[in-house]
Length: 241
Image: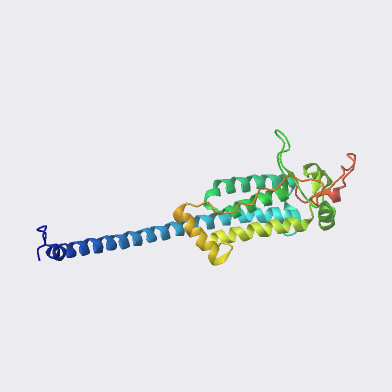
């Protein structure tokens, strides 16, 4: 039917409707295909990420356990010395900083908390980190294998051994969650993570780095032992560096 303007809108509609429908359908089909490809690529990437995290976990978990065993005087602590522990710490630091960007922020923060609980860093140019230990616990459980010469490699303050256990457990839990792809917080945390990945929102909460120790932090401060203290053969450790 023609109108006063000479344009037959009904005929135009009948002619253009199939073209529009075909265009919309093709666009939707293309969108679904691209979405499927994107999901498949994301799945492959996640699988590769899990493999890398598992390899990292296998390497770093052994060293973390060695450090923990020495501080608790359990397991194979008797084949370790503070010199060995500092060397192991360097390996742990290297591994965490190499793999930092495939780990969750909570895991990296837990690693820094672990290091701050177990070691006193930044003691001056050329001075290695000192071990923050519970000396009474070590002397009691190591017996005559406790070497008083080690105390030059200990910090001048310590923490109760239970603090070591808490920091170790927290870090290992975060590492396990990263490997398994689990995040704390359940559904809402997962939803927030997906929204952040889509819109690049920076919503995650980062725990601040541990503060420097002070007198009110519950630390145990030690007085230096006499420098002329002698060590009998029975007091020497089984393995010395």
